[in-house]
Length: 122
Image (cartoon, rainbow, N blue to C red):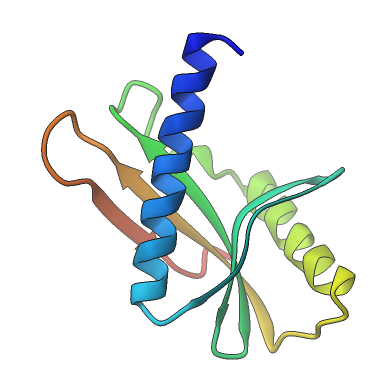
């Protein structure tokens, strides 16, 4: 793995950790992190009451690559919803609903990160 890829991976792991902490502070329960299957990956799977939450985490250190919101396309949302259904099915679960959320983490060079939770993208 190249140094650039390692740095990207470290930034992503940092953002996912901050996002998980933020969401649990809101009362959600983390069920799984970085779930992978041949169809894709879910960053964080949570329970919010009876609702299964599929959370996409986007971490940025600058706006050079665009905003985290721009990275979540309609096709990505469809794939995340399908992955949530697959995740539940592999565990024999029938959640009260499936929601796709975004947590955008802006990590400035100095100071605290800025975390924005956008629930219910689909």
